[in-house]
Image (cartoon, rainbow, N blue to C red; front, side, top):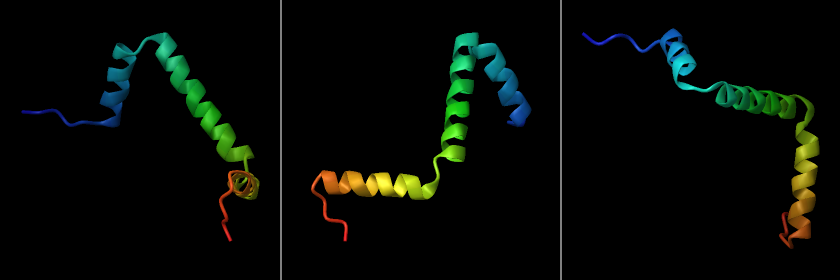
Length: 61
């Protein structure tokens, strides 16, 4: 009989298979992504991409 694939089981598996360096890198990546999503607001990103498109010679409107 197969065991259920649960979140708890995946966390335990990650604890045994990942090195502390890999866990730290993953935590840092998640923190950086959270920071980016929290502090880089949509209008700021839109404006910078809009300006990049114009600088690259792409007519967007």
